[in-house]
Amino acid sequence: MTKRQSMTDTPIVVPASAWLWGGKSSCATSSTSTSTNSISFVDGSAFQQSWIYELTYTASDPYVATVGFAAMRDFVSFLRNAKTDSFGTANPLAGDVKSVATWTNSQPARLFNDFVWLGFNQALDGSKVFDGHLNFIGGGNGLGINYRFAQVGRTERNRQNHIAQTEGVFPFSYTTTTDSLTGKTDGRNVRCTATNTCPKVMNLYSANEMWVKTGSLLTSHPNTGADLVEPDNVRNYLVSSGPHGSGATNTTSAPSSSNSQYGSQVDALPLHRALWVALDEWISAGTAPPASANPSVAGGTATFVPTTGAYTALGIGAVAQADVGYPDIPATMSKFSGLVTVRNYWNFGPDYSKGILANIPAIPTGNFYKSAVPKTDAYGNDVAGIRLPEIVAPVGTSSGWALRPAAFGGKADGMDGAEGAGQFVPFAKDDATKVAGDARPSLTGLYGTKDAFVAARVAAANALKARRLLLDVDATAYGVNAAKPITVAPNPYYPGAYSYSAFSLP
Image 1: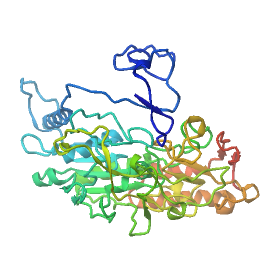
Image 2 (image 1 turned 30 degrees about the vertical axis):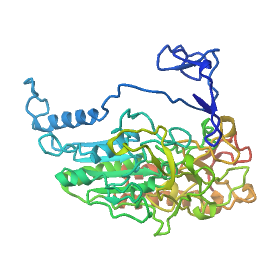
Image 3 (image 1 turned 180 degrees about the vertical axis):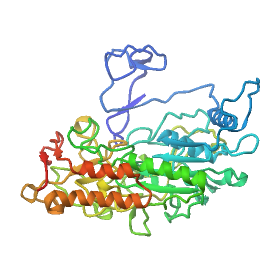
Image 4 (image 1 turned 60 degrees about the vertical axis):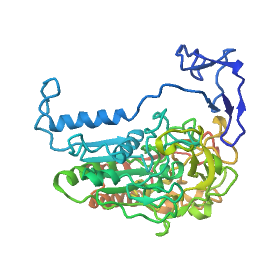
């Protein structure tokens, strides 16, 4: 076992005599777990808050994880096609299933990326299993399931499962590409195309996937970064400035313990609802869905992630502020470090192609995949993707990345991220209270009147509704919510940040 406070620190070996299997399994000293798979310290002490602990051990008796895919395939195929099961029990849905679609979030979205890639959307009788998938925040990653000793519960973040994991390995896209590093030609659509069983796929991913999980590889070539032509059955949409999930639309509560700022303001759920309807119409009526919306280096809306730096072997890099276009914000209010994930090409050993990992953790090769992150406008909000009303008519800066505060393991150089969180840095309420050095406008400087702000939000919502990216009820809600007073609570990690109570524009 080793421990370290930060990813960039040298791991410290914890003597085998200092810990044992079983006992207290969490940082909380009140834990009473006696699981033999948990770990405790001999002296009864707790794990150190925010430190990274890594355990390497010899395992045995791996299960065949992809049997789960076969079970999903066979169960759904039974529901939509069979009259009875093998025991003669009647199928309660026999003859009633017109189509089957899924909505998935995070790891389940990565599950369906692999489900399609590994050919499980073809039933045993050759028919199609699922007709469509709305995959949210899976990006270009898989589940890491088709390997000996698969650990499908793992997910990559800035500080966890970040090194040599099998989640972010080729292929990344539904488009077929040839990877010069592996020598393979592949894509998630290859097997289903050969059997005419491809589902209709909507990949909805956030800016956090781009910063933390090299999400640009979903839509660009892994070696050159060039934009890919997506298959006819696939649409890809970036949620501009979004976190890994849906952001909070208020600033009345303090930042979470692992985030030095408020969470991103971007709420993707209204977009989900509209795209779910669009997916249904695509499946049932053949109505073409809204066009894809992705960042592009060639289009000037994204910038490449540098693969140079002291910590690239750890998957850690930094993007220059000027390359992103992020505005100047005083250090007393926010910090831009450019922290970003670098996608290594790992050496897992000679039998990797057979699903056998000899090198755990894998060995860095010094080779990298070509990823990118979105550029921002003058307010610090992403310029590409689907810009929801909170980005088109903002009350501050939202981003898909966030940094940990020092009280919870963050380093002064900003090389410790807040995992799946995004962040929000509010505008000043007026020019008189705007801090010197803040390049962004105040609310009154930007909108002038409350009516103008509400009108801007409504116009943004209606524009998205016209593109079938918002439903009527959600477009209306944006106007109702915009009319409410804007309240910003103090930030305990940045005492110089703006705070004001129940502010309403004139």
